[in-house]
Image 1 (cartoon, rainbow, N blue to C red):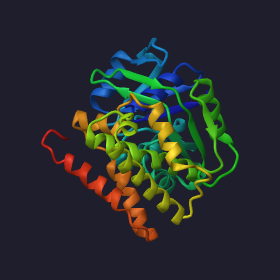
Image 2: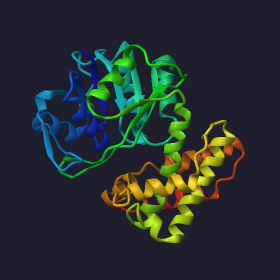
Image 3: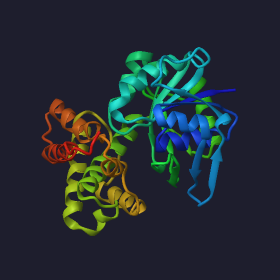
Image 4: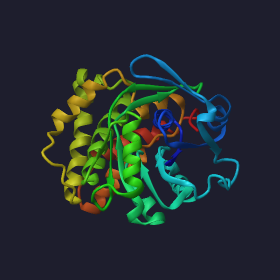
Amino acid sequence: MMRIAIIGVGSIGGILLGALSDTDAEMVAVARGTTATELSDMGLVMHMPEGSIEVIPPDAFSTFDSAVGPVPDEIHGSCDAAILCGKADSTPMLVQLAEDVLTPQGVAISVQNGLGHAEALAHRLGRSRVLGGSITHGAWRSDEGTVHWVGRGTIHLGWIEGGAPSGAAAELLSALAAAGLEPEWSENMQRIVWTKLLVNVAINPVCSIAGVRNGALLEVPELWEQALGAMQEAATVAEASGVDLGDMVLDDHLRQVAGATAENRCSMLQDVMAGRLTEIDALCGAVVSQGESAGVPTPRNAMLHALVKGIQISPHFD
């Protein structure tokens, strides 16, 4: 039986924990503070995309509160896979937790937004134990801890060095499929990660600054111009960095995603509304940094980065 740790049980982490708990996999939830207490005491309440409600009891998984001390002996070195789902600014801590919970042959995958997470894992675990990941399932988490799975998508995963699935990675792929999470193995995770980043730098900062749902990009020409401009800059940076984006037409791709998620509040807007720090550094900030390295100017991303950082100065932010 495969043992899988979900490290960071927010909205996406909640989806993965809930869906995988209905399979043969043995699940470990690694969370902090109130979230860990709620999972341990009450389990997980998940609103499904089709409208039903599933209650996952607390005995369906093991819970570890990473705020209370080191990983306990019964979890330490016991997991075949670790999936990192926490916020980008928590990556160093999440990587350490992944190293602590994994077996020597265990694999780790990050489905976080932004760049650099797989590389951070590879620095600690070695590139042969790290998968690149990207997830398009939509979710949000209420203040009461209920997870709302608002849209089904896919999970792309693959070795950062390329190659076919094997060992624990093959087992993880099967477990994700059994959970109905629609995994797709990719031989080119660089393209997958950058494609997701292009959408995120277009939608997240613009909708967060304007305080609107994703569909507003298609209704307000000025917002569309800012979003598409940020996306085009990021694509130029990707190509200058040696990333093959394939034959994607940026305008069409952004229009498709914005239309399919028109009623969604993006994750960054949810963070702004809740007074939480955003992932802007791992999105527009990462594009600006990579652009400097590649010799590509990124004024649009720099502006959006600065504006969101300015919002975070507000006293109601953590």
